Length: 178
Image 1 (cartoon, rainbow, N blue to C red):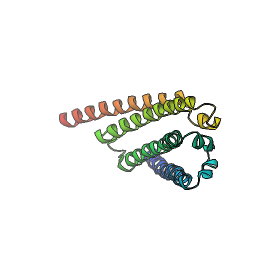
Image 2: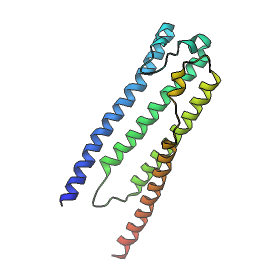
Image 3: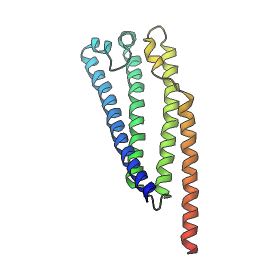
Image 4: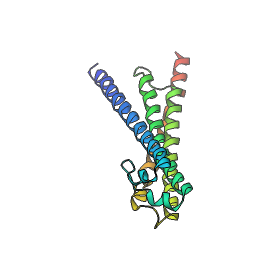
């Protein structure tokens, strides 16, 4: 009983932390979008982008180049928020007495796909910043390190989702034999 209550407490703490992360990612994406809208009215607003690079040189280079950079910068926190949202759903529906459900396995697979998408998106950001090298601030490129850890995390989550699917199959077989 002791370890079960400790695990439940840990899951509740993880749920709270995930909610904080979700809200933080949404605030970051929203702030970038608001700054983008402000820069449409006042181009100097692109000089002080939220916790990120100065994109004023990209704005001066070309509006579409600037817009693509902002879209790419906004996509990463939005995808991170989607991951946090899926984790919130997993944690709220998770049952310690019967942990293997097809819904959890499918949500884990979605999280793995989103993590892979973030890795691919960061590669696209690096390509875009490479094309605009000399125009863009160096921080724009440094913001988008694809990192092997993202790819490894996506692979690990996919493997875990497959283990959960097998666990569901075994649990179903076990229920049928009883």
